Length: 231
Image (cartoon, rainbow, N blue to C red; front, top):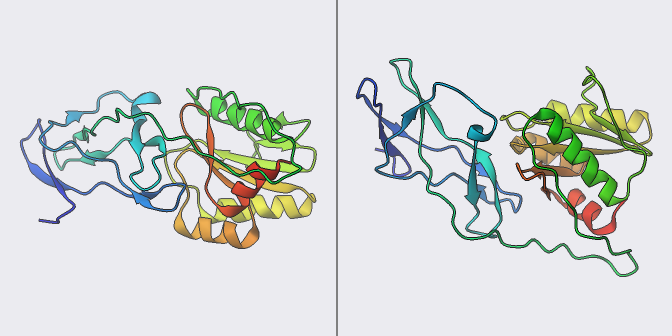
């Protein structure tokens, strides 16, 4: 048995599986997997909601607390199981971002709770306004270009899915920014594929991860600099 695997028995057919939770990079860069609750019985998923698709996970390296995709396991009997995760009881550690001297201090950001995909776009728009971008407009309906938000000197994309944002998404966003002489900013609920993050670092595209409280966290150096200096 894999040392990282957790035995999971299907309550429907009683088959036993070895489940290895997927690891995603924390905003600090450390791989992080949801802590599976050993010995707890999984439950069949019969109805999906936005809230049930996420669990709270705390990084042991930096102390950040954020939302992660709910671990699931598909059994050969056709049942999809919700794998229990140990609850987080400690409060999240505050994230301090240094601000260069001479940069105007901002009031605390007031997030918007995310309940659906449109809320995610709205939350990102509020954050960009807080950073100092002006005339932020949402695209209605979402355009084929993938540009969800536009502002003065800004284009932004918001990925509300449960899959990490792809390399293609980052590159297309950057091209839109180049052709319109605008800064490109990307937001994602499920983080970023490794090649997408590497390419964003090369292109200096700020990447942010949104949790369900609507609070973006910077993922790369370009995002950290944007938070520190503002628009």
